[in-house]
Image (cartoon, rainbow, N blue to C red; front, side):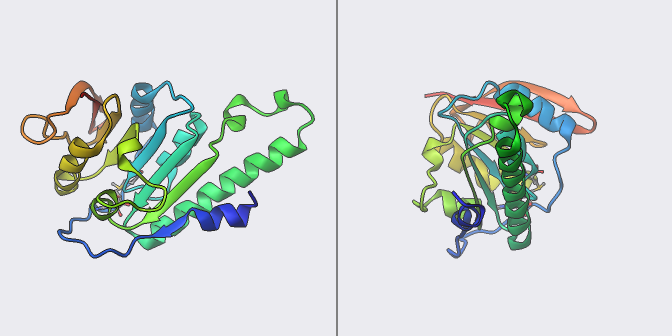
Length: 208
Ligand SMILES: C[S@@+](CC[C@H](N)C(=O)[O-])C[C@H]1O[C@@H](n2cnc3c(N)ncnc32)[C@H](O)[C@@H]1O
């Protein structure tokens, strides 16, 4: 698909009115934290669908693409960040295509680059509104790897939806707050925790 067409198809705005609002401010996940998170997520298969809830500037999505995940979704409430992330991802995809096309042999292109995903979308809107409705091609029930970096209030809003809708076998990583697995997230089992700097990483698997 031409870059412009892919860019436009990945540009979706959800303007459904929220019922309850909470917005975690933007902060980036540092590489060291993402390293731990992706150690847990690996390996990716062709069928994996990756979601970053509150996808910010798109860095987590780009990491998932570089790791070989073929389908990635971001949901971001801040329109400016959603737009910035789309530009960054489109740029990455285009640069990779250009390099691949101009290389004489596949060996000239690193395996990381040849694996870049074929489908990406960044929704602009609140996760809690998008996840509760059928919205174009997005289905939370099909997401197999989910990342979130939200504050206590954000985790509180998101947790019951993940518990209700994620398929069994899915993996979830939450930085820097745990999900309430005792009362709310009864289908999510804590597999491991890691401390990176002053942040905690919580890794879960979804059971039946
Ligand atoms: C701490 S930042 C994390 C950004 C990115 N995921 C990362 O780890 O680098 C949280 C992001 O979530 C977004 N956000 C907060 N509440 C949200 C909600 N209810 N739905 C969608 N995005 C939300 C914020 O605008 C912000 O960009």
